[in-house]
Image (tube, rainbow, N blue to C red):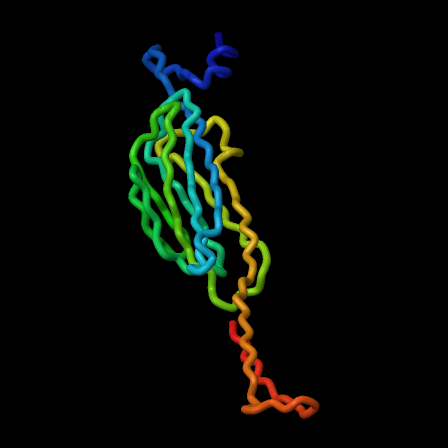
Length: 178
């Protein structure tokens, strides 16, 4: 019945010659996770994941990551997709994503030295140029990473008076470094 076909995501249309044709539908969803990398490296690693909930295979899948303006792109890698930076957006392209499958990409960025602490919002999305999506509302995601400033303060105290005498002033030197 028509309501069952609509629920299942398998839609059919009538052609002029009286035959019924299948129209593929899919549900691809995006997820993004961000984590601070080694603080000494001032880096953030984002993992982008696209999942196809089906029922059809999704053709020409593209994961896109709009990089925050505060960061510097380092690299993007994926075992299944080809990734490249294009004007501040990382695009990871692949072929078909079969129903029930997922693909992922890792994007590494660097935080600038001297940046103000606070949240960095990264937005990503997924699309399928060749297949309509049943649930387009779940095709975008964001990750918020709280950037903070690290310091490694050190102090060294030295006696400057060569032969201190009780009751007399003593001079000390304090060296502070970060």
